[in-house]
Length: 559
Image (tube, helix red, strand yellow):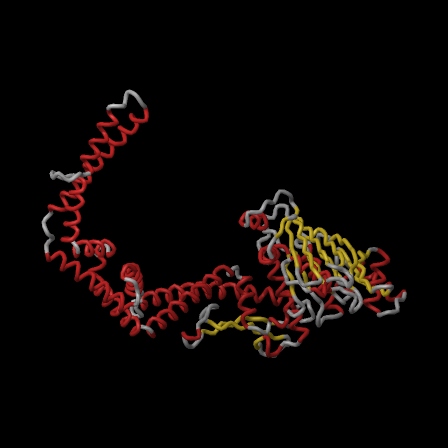
């Protein structure tokens, strides 16, 4: 429940902290006094979008604080757990700050919170019913959604909607695949042809092939160079060679090893060099004495090099990059080959359709089972509201064509209504007056709010202009209905009817002052101040003892 609401520099309010009662809270005041300010503030704390016009003129920003008691509220506790937030205390403090620049910030228990998160949490804390709720009754989907809520079928309805969307998505996908089937086959053939062309290069390392080809093309000259190098390093002729000179140097250093450490180090390095040169002479000797390569090998390399050059020109890529391009072609080919054809998707579409029909059928049975009871509840609540002859009935008409089926099911659902004896029932939007729609909307909202599990914590109910289209004794019944609802759930309602306001557990007056600055003030009324406000609402601007007596009689009649 909402414990308190604190407003700072908000619209016409300078600074005010309002404590809320546990049951039925009512807001009254002259037209234009600012009664909707509290609802606007609550909406902001429930995640609605901000408007810089809500910041009091001359102030840099406005702040709103809403403190909720969530002790034993498992739904809110679960929300905190799912969003990795701690809930150490039985209270939730929401702060919303609005700036003149149009920006806004939000905090949850002192920690910044996104608007999306706040809105998600807000639905668990506050349920605001607009004064235009009766207009929603004219939309067929509202009646269907309301019936589902009353029938405890909201979850099943969501599954049905999701199943229908899955079916539609598969149909669109199959149509798209069918439309590009020819292009898909052409692309597959092209990729297969390109991969066949490049297949010989995929089995080798093209860089190694180029190096081997370069070497074998010059093998005879390289063998001669190897012989010449070998002659310089070691030969049997009288010409000086490296090994002979190196041997002389080693002998010179070895004779001085015991005299100088330098000669000892030089000797070690020279012996190492002698070993390395010996290995080099072996390599050069083997290279110089090798047999000439097989001409077929050189021909194979020529063919691979020529293919690489040809494909390089064809695809405008360096030959060395063709392998990466071929890998890309292979991935594209696999994707195209694995993409289901429109024929192959027919089975998936049929399965999705059958799953949808099964859910829609189950949902329809649940609606039809609940409809008579829900209709009786509607009539029972409407009759005391100056509609003694009210009758209601849900009518289900199966759609004539399966193409008309939708996410809400296979049936059109109408709520038929009649307010007068002898008059046939017709769809609500065709015959109901504004006052009748208003009462119907109120009753439907109350029934939905009270249909929830009694063991489940319920959000605070907020009614904007709850008395639209009613007066007199009907207003009295509405007030009693809201007071009764307030026994199990916290409510806040704006009303212009004294009969409704008198039933409240807490009466809040909003009044406007015109001093140096226009300012709205919030007052919790009790005793004589409440009597005077009820008298004003009943008898107009001039308050007399007669209107006061009438106000006292209203309060005395509260049960």
